[in-house]
Length: 112
Image 1 (spheres, rainbow, N blue to C red):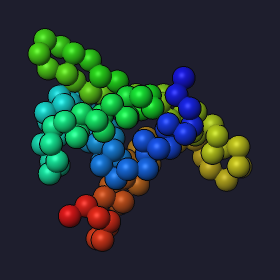
Image 2 (image 1 turned 45 degrees about the horizontal axis):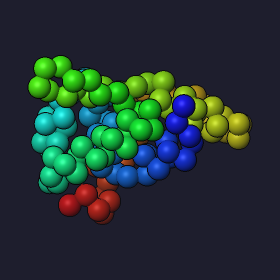
Image 3 (image 1 turned 45 degrees about the vertical axis):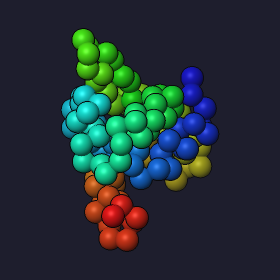
Image 4 (image 1 turned 120 degrees about the vertical axis):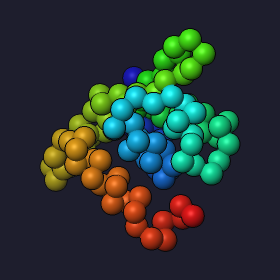
């Protein structure tokens, strides 16, 4: 089971949060995940490896194509930890998607 440190480290990067937002919509091939970013496929693959290592996504090879899908249970440990403070509700993926959309659309977020 991934540690909280791995989960929160994975969530700390805006590119990885954007990838999670994309995967909320549907499973995607690695090349499709990489398309909107101005970074190399190798860099995107590293980001995907971090997300997979944290248990937030799963990757599956189908023929010559690697597919990525969101692992909704991946944030369960972090959600449980945050609930311990008594001020957070369980993570709702719809709410999380709205949060990511707002975060990614804010000017000056370093995503130029």
